[in-house]
Amino acid sequence: MAKLLQLPQIWLALFCAAGFALGLALPVNLPPILRVAGFLLFGAGAALMIWAAGTMMRARTSVMPGRIPAAIVTTGPFAFSRNPIYLGDLAIFASLMLALETVAGLVLLPVFALTLKHLFIRSEEQRLAARFGADYARYCGAVRRWL
Image (cartoon, rainbow, N blue to C red; front, side):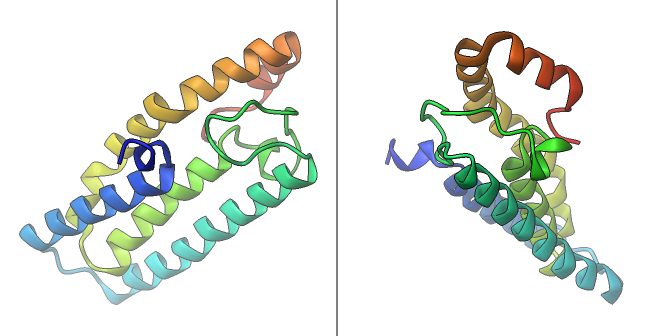
């Protein structure tokens, strides 16, 4: 189980389940257009994650959290976000809360963002800083963590 908790996708699933339960406990009627927006946001989040993973693979660096990076990726979605895959996770979470009409679950979005930051992003940033030093510091100065 401890190995599974090292995967951001497991945390996405856990937060989706908790958000869904919260949304069922506190139902809110949404206009149909917001459900449609949820489905569109899901597509955007998934596309962002695929684009980012493909960009990382082309740079020949690991997509898996916890691995030593082979390169700083600054192109593609990494030109506007240092963490586009985690941004995609947040978009997918929000999209499901809208699409499934469990909007009360959106209160967990900032908690999910903080969880990703504390469990994954900080250690990834430390590894990148240790490996790439000033180059990574310049990248951090030019590109925000989320958007």
